[in-house]
Length: 82
Image (tube, rainbow, N blue to C red; front, side):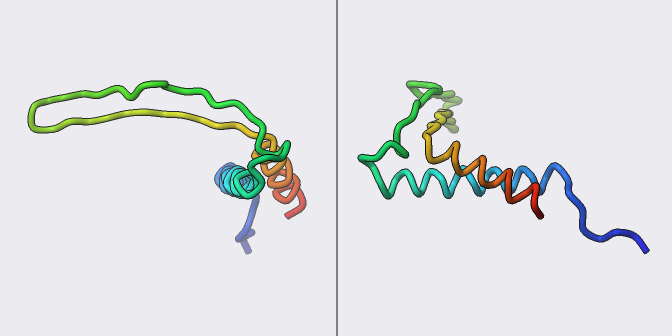
């Protein structure tokens, strides 16, 4: 029989994304702690494409905090165990 479950890149990506979200949520719960310390980078002003009948606005910002880094480490540890 074939092995049904296995480790792959998509599973790792889902674990890492969950770690980022949970870490960010934890950092938001404690705004005055060291966990919420971080750096924000990306586009400072949105890029707008106006085509007359259609207007598209694009902006991208990433905020990396201590809590999200801890979340990523825990997620990778859990992925490695499972």
